[in-house]
Image 1 (tube, rainbow, N blue to C red):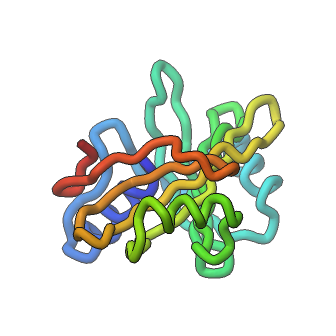
Image 2: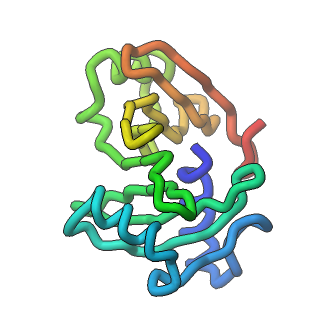
Length: 167
């Protein structure tokens, strides 16, 4: 959800001409990405154009988040300085979710309006595992939620978002 929330903030602030980024996040020109980072992303997503990148601290390590665009949808790839992909957040259509996941969203949030839906895949030692699906949605009662659902349809987490920040 971190990426989703910050993507929404970036769109609004860019439209208003307000400087973006968190205190611990620094924009990185694509031509200044470490070679290992760029190569890892290009190898995993050949023929997909890189759109932007940022650098941030994850604990005591530096990681890069590279945003790609494929078929009009964003893919955010988190990569270590050494070029190891650790996380992939890929925008998906609600209709393309597994039935169990769709059912959970529809039962918990009937008539919700979905701002964005993503699959979240963790990568460890080069092995990727779909971890969960996340959505930022506006429920029928007009409350905004960030919701995580496991691939089997179990609800992992739900956080109400107030004023652009999670509660």
